[in-house]
Amino acid sequence: INGIVTIDGVAASGKSSVASGVARALEIPYLSSGLLYRAATWAALENGLTFDTPEAGRSLTALLGSWKEGGQPLTLRPLAGGNQIWQGDHDLTELLHTAQIDAQVSAAAVLPELRGWVNAELQAVTPPFLAEGRDMGSTVFPQAEYKFYLYATPRVRAERRVLERQQDLESVEAALKLRDERDARQSAPAPDAVRIDTGGGTLPEIIAQVMGHLSS
Ligand code: C5P
Image (tube, rainbow, N blue to C red; front, side, top):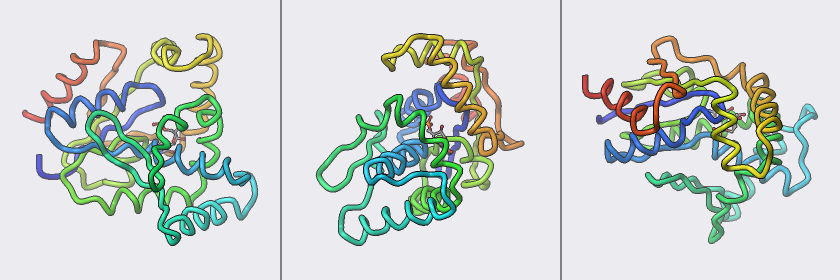
């Protein structure tokens, strides 16, 4: 692979585990776009910004821009074993996978200014890499060499996610369905993506399925 591979899919479809496994097998980095959306959401919440006003997007990108100018930009570290977000000397990653960020991130992600910021961060990276998210194949990297779209039923996804959150299965499934609805606009698969049902196999099997397409 000397170009770009995209792996898109719905929340908790197994995207990041599959992306990490495939990136390691290919010995290329992977970029988690969702982690950038989560970090921007965290930044907004820390600074008392809301997402429901006409100036919300501009205020948020102004905040991110001022951090960059001040030498403290939010930086994605695309480690193969799991992406991290740092600000200066601080690793923020573990603050970004909480039920609060889960509940707020879709409202931030509809802001066009924020989508522009995330896309510019990703497009500044030199290939080869694998990009993972919702609209990597459809919008951000339409020229990608290989595109995949992962999906699974809400119940299968909730059963996975409940292992990572301090919540019961019903609330996790309800939160996922709500996020699906809110994310629907930017989650349409690229027409040329290979679709894979991740409920149909174990993680190593899904990774092998993706690798099979890459080598054929
Ligand atoms: O992938 P993850 O579930 O961590 O993404 C968090 C949120 O970021 C999604 O629910 C969605 O609102 C937003 N997102 C997006 N476009 C992407 C990646 C993530 O809108 N490419």
